[in-house]
Image (cartoon, rainbow, N blue to C red; front, side):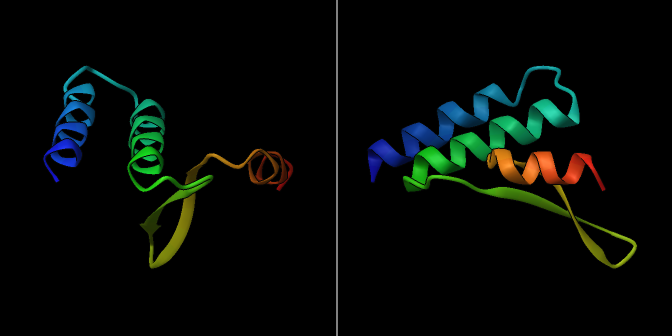
Length: 68
């Protein structure tokens, strides 16, 4: 438990820097993936009542959205 809290604290410190939204999404997602030992993930934000994917770690999803 203490190790997990240390990892969360270290991840949070990275967010104290001045970052673009895209840089913030990337840090949040990859730190979360590491904490839960996940292979991939995405961040969604609600805009006008619709969930919109703003960042993903999955290359195929990134490529497919570039063409929409």
